Amino acid sequence: MNNKYILCWNHSKNDFEKIFINDVADLTTLYGLNHQIEVIQKNTLAFESGLPFNHGLLWGVRGSGKSTLVKAILKQLIIKTNACDVLEVNSEDINDLPNIFLNQKFKKKIVIFIDDLSFEQNDRRYIQFKSFLEGSFYTNRYEFLTYVTSNRRHLMKRDMLDNERSSAISQDEGVEEKVSLSDRFGLWVSFHNINQDEYIEIVKHYFSLNNILFDKETQRDSLKWIFARGNRTGRSANQFFNHYCLENNITLKK
Picture 1 (cartoon, one colour):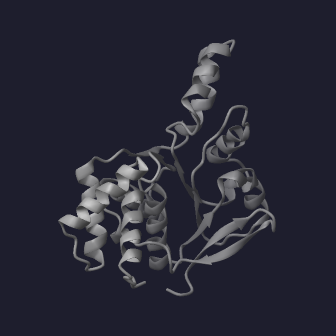
Picture 2: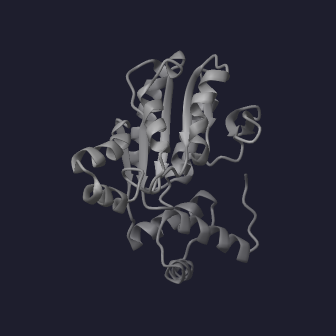
């Protein structure tokens, strides 16, 4: 597995860099996301096998595991097969995608991962990105699957859509143009807030994976952790676990 890698786009170099996947989390680290994992795994397997598939938009609250889930599934794909090239493109560099497809040479199917994508007011990049997903002569050279994560269901703020409704000559047309980008994703996978019990179960999962005792005192500390930060997510559960290990001089196996 040491020679397995993804290709990360470096805008300044106008080229890819190989990033080895050793430190990417496994699916076993995720808890409470069985449905989301199943959906993305099934879609990825369909793409790999030559069956019908859809581009995927994973959206929802920050820290809910969207990026970790995609990376873990793509790691699984890379280990399993050499049939696909996995590309990571920074959300700020999506305008480079036409250049990538025109000038880079790929011999395999392509999976593109874009993390934390969203568009602000007057950001016209979404038009070009929509065209990219629809397909053109340069993208049709390759078979590709795109996974995007975002905190926003339509990849842009709700007030942007509301402003469009109030200012457009044809309100329906203005909103439709912006919403139509998210419609290019046939697969929508949502990630929602978790309650306190679910948070505790995620923390317990991290302790169990590493064979560390989780007692009532530790549970109280884990709740104090989220109360102090004002958020309750899978990410905060992982951060508490790391904090606990630091405070107790516990070295984790990689």
